[in-house]
Amino acid sequence: MQLIDSHVHINFDIFQPDLAAVRARWQEAGVVKLVHSCVHPQEFASISQIAEQFPELSFAVGLHPLEADKWNDQTSTLIKSLASSHSQVVAIGEMGLDFYKADNYEYQQEVFRLQLDLACELNLPVIIHCRDAAPAVRDILQKWRNLYGERLRGVMHCWTGTPEETQWFLNLGFYISFSGIVTFKNAQTIQATAAMVNSDRLLIETDCPFLSPVPKRGEKRNEPAYVRHVAEALAKIRGETIEEIAQKTTHNACKLFGLAL
Image (cartoon, rainbow, N blue to C red):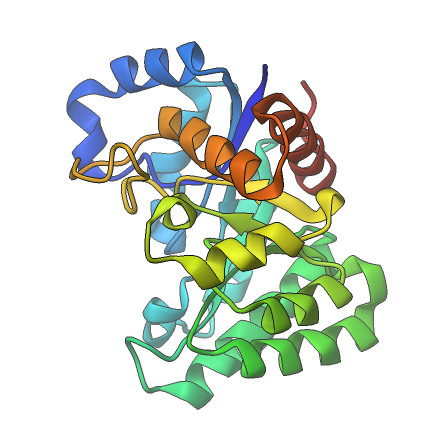
C-alpha cells in the first residue's frame, strides 16, 4: 500500500534532531511521496536541502497569507525564479486567505491574486490556505478560473469547510485535502464533508508538525507516518477500505502535482 502526504512542514526546527528516524517511520508506514509546503520564500534553501537528501520529497514555493505583509516588489520575481530553478518544485504556495488570525483583508487578497497570476504563468498548481474566508477565496478563484481556465488548478489544503462550501471548490476543479482534524471526535461537519467529496478529488495530508490525528493527538509533534491514520479515518467515514483510499489519494496527488512513482 502506497500513501502520499500532500502537505508537510518538516523543515521546522522540531524535526531537526531526528529527521532520519522520522523518514524511516514514514517509509515503514508506506508513505512513498511527500509534498512540502512553503510559508515564505526564505524557506526555499532549507526545504530544497531536505529535498536533496530525500528524493521522495517534492515541494512548493510561495507566501502564506499570514506573511502577506512581507510581500514586496521583488517577491513575485523571487518566487518565479526559485520555482524555475529546482526540478522538485511542483506547486506555488501555500497561499490564500486567513481572516481568522489577521484582518488585513484587502492586502491578503492582493497578494493572493498576484500569486495566482504567477502560478498560472508557470502552469503550476496552487496550494490554498483558507480559514474563515471561503466566500472570498471562491470569488477570487472563480475570476481567475474564468481568466485562465484549467491552468488554474490546485488543492484546498487542511480543509474544514461545510459540504456546501466544499462543492464551490469542487465545481472549480479543485482537490480537497483532509488532515488529522477529520479524526477528531467533534469534527462532524468535516466528516460529513469528507463523505461527499468525489473520489477523484480526494487528498490526504498531515500538515505536520501540527494537528496530530487520533490516536496520536496527545503528541505535540505530528509527522508524515501519521497520514495513515487520516486514511483510516476516511475509509471508515466513506465506507471504503484503507487500500482503496490509499490508491485513490495517491493517484490524485500524482495527477495534481505531476509526481511519478
